[in-house]
Amino acid sequence: NAGVTQTPKFQVLKTGQSMTLQCAQDMNHNSMYWYRQDPGMGLRLIYYSASEGTTDKGEVPNGYNVSRLNKREFSLRLESAAPSQTSVYFCASSGPLYRDSLYGYTFGSGTRLTVV
Amino acid sequence: AQTVTQSQPEMSVQEAETVTLSCTYDTSESDYYLFWYKQPPSRQMILVIRQEAYKQQNATENRFSVNFQKAAKSFSLKISDSQLGDAAMYFCARLRGATNKLIFGTGTLLAVQP
Image (cartoon, rainbow over all chains, first blue to last red; front, side, top):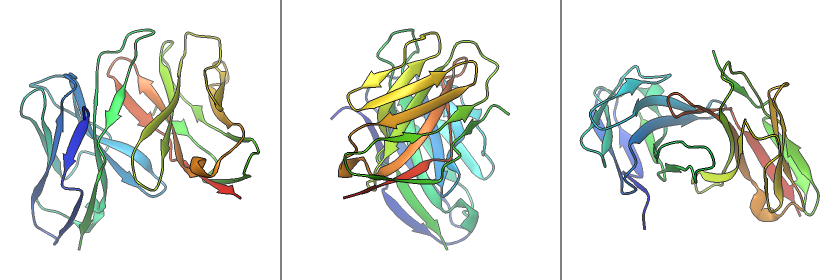
């Protein structure tokens, strides 16, 4: 099925360990995003990529790095995980925004990350 | 900061009744998009309804409708004939047109009582 695929779905890390969350979309979207969801905070933007080869910081970028490997893939890396990074992470992609277009922001199914 | 505010952390409604979820936002843009997303326990983010700011007519999707008050920067969601499957977290979001970034509110957890 077309959409956004995130891996892994669950992960437990020890403080100080590193890991990369993978995201791939097959809708030929230019823009991709990483959000984190915490109770009472909604979804907050970590990083986004407006197009292949570009990345920009969002609201909460500290402690994260990203790579837009190609048009399809956008990965999120935690270099040294901290308990404050325990969260649910969502990847999303979107196409161009036009008036009256069938605009869509497609989300992955999320990764539940626990840092102990 | 350009924010989205949902002032109701939790709401409850009886099955078959109507409930309204509130959302206000702040923006300096004249052209933008507003959304309501539903997140059931599965974590999936499901688009419920969207509203283009340039349209005066309120959007409607089956049992879901919005009350969009542009001058007041208010965007509430009305769910009619509530069903057990409507129980979920609901997020209001605004799209920043220049960057395509979605800004989310903190969510309203809706419970539906049988």
